[in-house]
Image 1 (cartoon, rainbow, N blue to C red):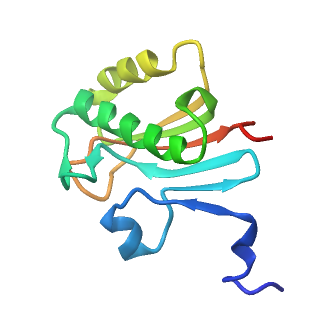
Image 2 (image 1 turned 120 degrees about the horizontal axis):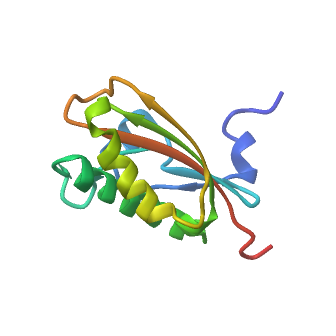
Amino acid sequence: MRDLKTASKDRRRIFSGSEFERTYSYSRAVVVGPHILLSGTTGYDYATSTLAEGAREQTLQLFRNAASAFAQAGATLADVVRVRMYISGAENYETVMAVFAETFRGIDPACTTVEAGLFDPAIIVEMDMDAVSHVGA
């Protein structure tokens, strides 16, 4: 069995600078070959340490965060093939999905949406995504 520290040599880690990544020891994204796996991402602005207000703004910031991580991996949101979405309340569904549709129209990734209690009651939406990029392949 391989040691956990050496088992990761085939992986490239992407970090956003989020305090959560440092505190809880995880990567914003992990790249393995052409696969990019994005961790649960919210509308938290890591540069200002603030959470965007409202469902639309949180979703827009979430996509900016995701796009930044994918760019570091040599990909874009156009490379996303799967999204898992967690919305804190059904009343925000239409707003979040409108931004999702604006962002992914024509890309049309597979998507699962769940209403769920999130770790911070101020967070309205969280998404994790999988992408496949053939940049450099």
